[in-house]
Length: 392
Image (tube, rainbow, N blue to C red; front, side, top):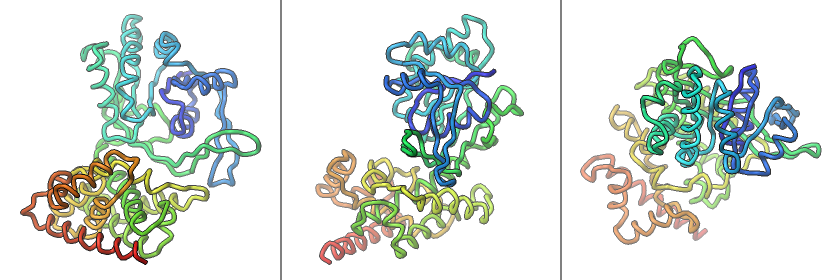
């Protein structure tokens, strides 16, 4: 039986990647830093999923094991030498932390003259596997030449609704039916090989990454920023407000128009994607996304290539409407959360330098451009609207 080692036994690791690895017939070894999770997986050799779209029906994922990457790094290295596939879901910011240990494992495989394995970072990040590879090189544990001999490194795009759940006296992970795992076909050792069943293998991953970021992440963020300004606590509450729902839909449709023109996605496929992967999922029973969590780090989310200004810039370049995207950016500039460093920094900058300077500084939009003037006007309108709402 083939073996997979997966770094990260959290909700995504267990509820998404672990599920697909199990369906693909792998014995799965989870490497994690949480001792309680490692001990439980080692003892029980299985865990439970609860299928949200099937009245929380229980599904058992068996034939699993676990090893502590903190207390047993040698065990992790040993597991890497026995694996055919290595995957991660540790959050992109933690890839530099796991990179040295993965590099050690790959070097050990070379010393044992083992065949190339497949390494994939399944993170909510653009080109996450490239980030992992760079982190391994930066660690000094392995050279570029050794990396190339040890494995292949396809990038991925990932998306699935997962929650911690408790049903029938058992703990587990709640999962939705809809998911997306897209893998770079050309980086596999054999492009016709499919190491994970249920994944989509494509030649141009960038277009699928942009589809997710410019539609799903875009809609999610704008829902949060509008929702906070209108006094809602969660994204779900905001989307039950028909006026806000229509604005979110309009922004996503502007993004979709740019994707259709740039990458030749069909309009129907983009609409189906939005309906299935966003609107249907956002109304999942029990789902509650606080606007402060979804809206956090507004500076990052206002970057010129990120979820709001990225599609707004694409629309501008293609001569398409971006009015509702700019409105979303305007409400992002109003986002407040004293517990979020970026939100505090953003408001401090606006208070000190003015919103025009903030737009130039954070979105990199030229103050001479027509789009800058439209964004500034949207901000002024949004600010006035928020003041009116606060007085009501």
